[in-house]
Image: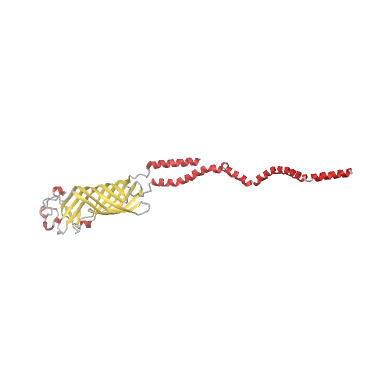
Length: 363
C-alpha cells in the first residue's frame, strides 16, 4: 500500500509539475536565444555591406591622390586656355601684319623720284623738229594715310636740262632764219600735294591699286640759251629736212654760202628782233621781259599706280601719269611711323605671361 501510495504521490507530483515544464523550457530557450541575438549583430553588419561601402566612397577624396593632382591639371588647362591669346598679341606686334585699322591715321616719311618725258610729237604741236626730252626730279614726301586715302604733301627739285636741240618755227618757210638752237640749264623747286585713293589687291593688305591727282606750284631758275643758226653741211645740228646747221657765233657773215646770200645771223632776218641771239644768248625771264617763266604750275592727272607695304614700317609706290610737262613715271619709298600695337607694354605682358606659364609648368 505504501508503494502504491508512493507511486501515486509521484504521479501526482509529475502531474503537478507538468505545467511548469513548458514554462521552464521556454525560459531556458529564451536564455539560450539571447546569446544568439548578440552573435547576430555581426551577421547584421555583414548584411549591411552597402552601408559599409558608403564610408569608403566618403574616404576616397582624401585618400585618392588624383584629386590632389587636379590643381596640376587645372593650371595646364588654364595655360592651354591662355596660349591661344598669345598669338594675337604676337600678331599685333608682327611687322608683317600690315592691315590698317579704320579711323586710324598712319604717317610715312620718305623720298620720291620721277622721270618726266616730253615726247617729240608733243613738242611738234608748237614747233617743228625738236627732240624727245627727259628730265629728272627728286623730292621728300609725307604720307598722311587713313581709311584707304593718302594725302601727300611734298617738296621736290626738278632738272630740265638738255643739250643743243634744233627747233623750227611752226608754219614758217624752210629758211635758216626760221631755225634756232636751244640749250637748257633750267631747274625748278616745286611744292605740291597729291591726293590718292586705294583699293586692296590681296587679303594680306600688302598690295593696293591707287588712283588720284596731284597739284603744286614751282619756281623756275637757271639759264635757257637760244641762238640763231646758219646752214652748214658739216654742222652738228641735223634737221628733219636733211640739212645741217650750226649756231651763229656772231652777227658776221657765215663762212659757208647761204641761200640767196642772206645772213641769218642778223636781226633784220628775224623780224628786226631787239635781241641779237648769237654767241650763247640767254633768254630773259618774265621779270626781265623775256619768255622764260618764273612761276610754273604743276598739275598731274591722272596719277595711277600700285602701293606695296610689305611690313608696317615701310611702303613703296610705283606710279605713272600725265602732267603739264609731259608723261612721267615715279617710284617712292617711305618709312612708317606706325608703332607695334601695345608697344613695349605688350612685350612685357607677353614676357610676364610666358614666365607665369613656365612657373605653372614647373609645378
